[in-house]
Image 1: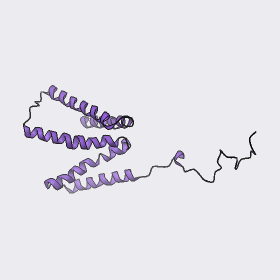
Image 2: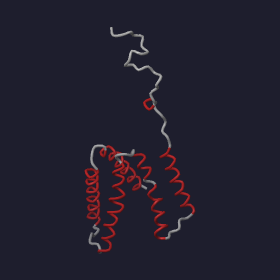
Image 3: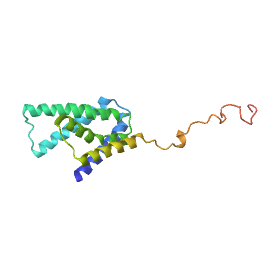
Length: 164
């Protein structure tokens, strides 16, 4: 549970900081250092645990495929979206990832989800839909300008008859 809580905290920081940074930087200027840091962290973890990086060619090919697919395309899409979508909405949309992965497991590997799993998937998708499509309450600054109000820049509707 502690690991999950730590991961949730770090991904929240990533989304919030990333949204601020992405407003002023290009995709590559943001994405390259983030991935370099992730790679160095993974290498440090391998070194500290004594994990060998000598992998068979088939395993290495799978690692490259995972780096290109979920890594560059998946996380890259989120990095692009951080510039245009609020971080809270984007993190909510990320909850659809396990649902989509489960759907792919059904299609690609013939997996059969349980009824409870299907109910959970529906609940996640409905919840995301409700939040994403919900209208936020209007604030005073969002209120449309009334066309019946007098224009303060003109003398029309003013008690002044001219410059003094």
